[in-house]
Image (cartoon, rainbow, N blue to C red; front, top):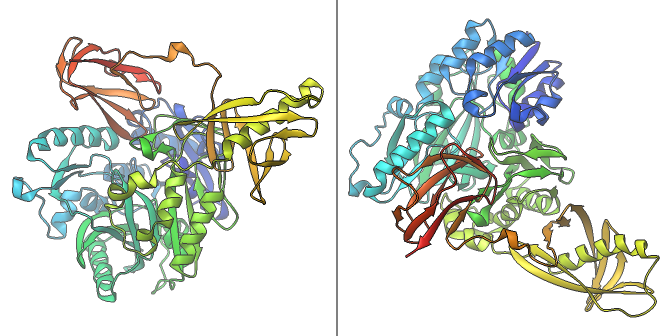
Length: 614
């Protein structure tokens, strides 16, 4: 019987596994990098072991260090979570060789399916080798790992070699394996997957379908179970193919078989030999705990002959610290508060006061709603996210709410091209017009007492400026003996934490939270602006600034100061939060400065290069 589990992972999934372990009376052990020394998963575990360093290659991808940590902490089992070493057969073997229980499939099954090229061969599908114009568009994919790393869409044959090089570098950095392959790119298909669970006694459960079509950068954003709109025949075919894949490798444990569905046809993608990020929607629909079942299977227990019956519908949204309107740029900083209304499941690796760093994925949490019907589940999740308190860096919360309410999604007609078509409209700024005024009045209420009460004589209007969604807003208000006033509204109440305004006979409450220059008014995030701009923040024309904190991982070959560059030419690559961001020349001209050298860590807004236009 398992008594102590080490989770070879971090963040949300480590916290998720620990939760089930605690309910089962199992002791928990965390591993953490130096960057994660104060992370939630390290704080909530019964014991934690340091992995020196910050980069994944030095920490969470070091299987030898994790095995030593498990032995030192007295763990008798290891759960890999997802990502990092979760689909590494050598790591699974090392765990077993150390006399520990591996909570996952046999290394041989991982080996057979962890490489997408070998998985396709096993299913009778050959990857593309000699790509021609007739094959375009194609998709370059990493053979190991997932999460969109090492993946590139190629629409021009001339771009193929460069994208292969970039994908190999990204895959090697993320998974320790630079193998990539090429396959046809199915345009605007649906991403549908099947959850399976298998024991050591020959029983394989099929736990329904999931739709994960809403994706950015080939990473899923919104997932649901069951996948809507599938015919009974197609659903049966997907289930049969998933069981076929599992039995082909004598699979044990939780796994997911992924497909692209287009024109009623299922195209096999891969089998993920691990727990998926989106597993909570399956848990909600089937009323099970997949981690608890993983533990029981690892202990040798048999599954029932038949899985439980599905009930209702579940939808999950991934909350990221990122700016969708700015190329999905990841954001860093202090997360001051994270709370959702009751009745919504929130899986997270953060709590109020935690810092969001630059080294790992920017996902903050997963919010999950379950209801008797799809429409009810979607409505419940959208409403909960809209009312959630998320105080800190910019997030994709508004995008999630708008996506869930988009007609194409509510009608179940979405596909993987959803954000390609609708991103501009979904990220159009629409701040609450009264939010800046509420912020100004809340600030004024804290200062009024310092001056001995309200003024008895009329005074000039006070002016405050705020930046909201990249736009500047100026508000004016006044002081009278009866309190604060503002044109066009009645100030019912003004306090430092709450303001109530009445407009056109309707009263609206505003909850206010201030953190330095940043102010959160209900769900609107504002930045208080100084009365006079700081001249030291000005940069020369053609300056390229870091869109986020990160590390310069590549510089274009032969690039030096004085080099002539073309508009759109890649100059350097910045890696932040598991993503590689290409920095290109804004104009054709001469590179006059290149202060950001290879390996340099930069802060957001740091000067990377200057291109002087011809």
